Image (cartoon, rainbow, N blue to C red; front, side):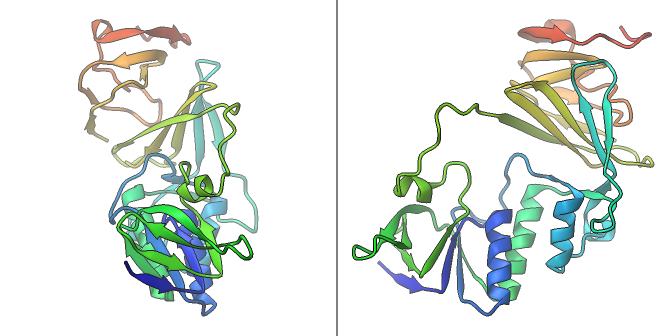
Length: 278
């Protein structure tokens, strides 16, 4: 067993943890940033960033230009409750950029973790936290232990370890079972350049949301157990096989167009097709 001391231990090297580590290390503190996986690693949801989040990246000194691999968007397109989508452009505010961003989480998270290291934080990968260290005299959390037997101690421990949060569970902070659970699914699409790229959100029902982080034509993707939009009809069911996906982001036309009716199992249909669509 080994023990490492720091001024702050940050559990979780996702966007929240890595950003916290950036600012703390920038102030001259020694920071141990713990990541249970190994970069690059993926995560569902969180690929689309609002202008407010974009501002925070700029404050960190991160290059968010398209040349640096980012996609800029002008707002949201929301499908639900009616046939026509809702167009929600970002508001024009002097204190925020005029655009949002899209980037794959596998790239985005590693980029932020690398920035924290550049600022002086120490990144520990494959550090799967299993519990906390508690000072018996003060009953304060003074560190964490990992699955492979390591111990990290510090006067301050930041729990940025996500929804499952082993740190929270270790101190008895459990989820409220009465709160509704949201489910997100995500995929990537590419398309021919068009003016005004927009990230799209498809609201299926109160307990399920699909975030489509738009990049730019052509993609084949395996889709299972998600809501599928076929032309302008919204189907909620289970896609049982791999189907090619080709979409027009301007109209959403062609999403799962390859799924014939006999490939759809169960579920219900909602929404009406636009005139001229079958």
